[in-house]
Length: 461
Image (tube, rainbow, N blue to C red; front, side, top):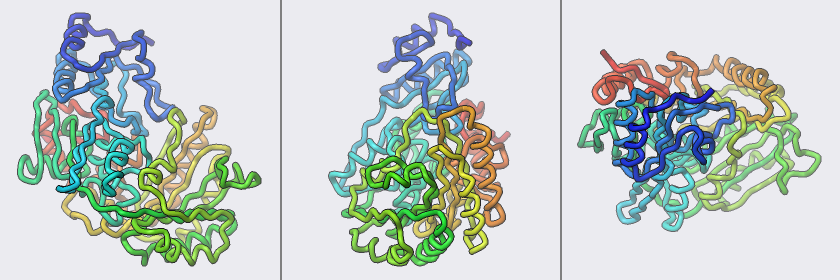
């Protein structure tokens, strides 16, 4: 079906107003421009405005309001629910706005709204500095940060949103707003976890930290050893220094040079320890895991930029994810977690992940709308596959993982890790009291709920 048509005069005006490009159905490049990371999402916007400047974004917002088109905002395009593209609406595409400016003296970095983790990390690497980023290099910095921002460095440096110092937004009225701790402080509070509900973030300023060294220990085990391995990782993680992060993952072994041929495509259990320090530290810490006899050992110093793209998956696969944040991970939970992994749909690139939380995450600002920060563990079923015929069984497996570990769940959830799971889950992502406060901020900056293609907050009346 062809997308909704827009009056030619309005479209001409938009093209004249924008320094960037405008695409409609039938234009060369339209299909590429509407494609996002999740291959399950196939939507046809009426207009895609690829903005290059803050003024472009303002003009695009005003165009969307005047033509009464629903508006979606695209940064990295990694929303598993596909909220960065909308049928018969306007997509404000920020990908051309990806400039990153590092200030190593002030230890800050200014990131435009369309930059990805790769842009950010590569700009910071020459100065041996970093801030908490996502675990995939193609993730957009904007949506990641505004949604909280969980990554490998979080136990040492806090969540990405904990490092947010200032932001520039275009509101639903097309106006520019600056916000920081002193200017528009209530909006600034809302951006520490409230997502893209309040405007289009055209730039973020983030705190940087020194990162002179990074190392990893990634150990693969046969699945029959997994319960013992997961318990050992749990015990190790509960006493680990904040420099250390990581997790446990069940997945089919990939066809990589370091994987013996007889293991490729077979279910394995891997532990990954990341360390904001030299390899000797992570090797010593991982001693209890080495003692369990891994079949593959990867222990090395690594550039942070390389770590950040180590688990990148190709765009276009079908994706369905979810998560539960746990108050603890006792032996019974370990057994349940390991038992469910035996049912991972094969053959797919699906992963069942247990993340170590705590450290600076738990110690971060309690007043931010991030109720999941107190959880010491997170379970993240992350399904990716190719064949639409596998949709039903794979989605059901993700839901089954959640159901299995729910007895230990805090009820709170990191919304960047889930798709469209209903209003109750959205409220759980912010906390009920925080949600009410966020709804008041929403009413002040987006009373008509223009920016609603997200984990949406209904404006307070």
